[in-house]
Image 1 (tube, rainbow, N blue to C red):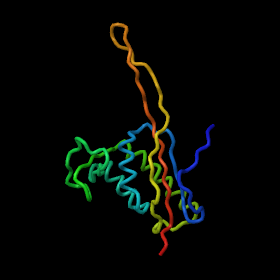
Image 2: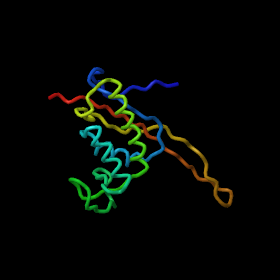
Image 3: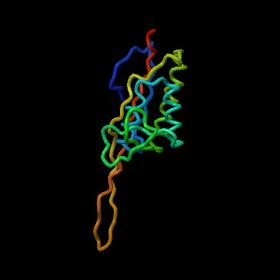
Image 4: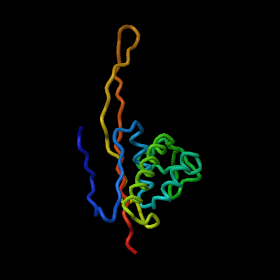
Length: 154
């Protein structure tokens, strides 16, 4: 069994961590969602992700913006999408982060997400058989998600 480390070191007394490994979601969509929720409180990010799943608020696509349509409900940007599958999986990680913060006896009102990253996971290779004795490669990519929340100093 491999051991995983977080890419950012934080103070364990003031922070909570959560991660998910090898999730079958889009890496591009998860990157844009992580960029959108970074800096939010835990409760704000849960509300945001639930609104994305219900298609009330769109996720702004800043890097992967080619052929992305304009949405009127994107905050601070013009183009966006509703990545439901990625939002559902990241919502699970955010809820796990909330439970870890409660377990560490942190104040949830003051906890902000200071680190939200998407990392490339493993690749599962297979063969897609075609007509006339041909075949094509089929590659399924997975994603790692890391979230770290820290108590804001006030």
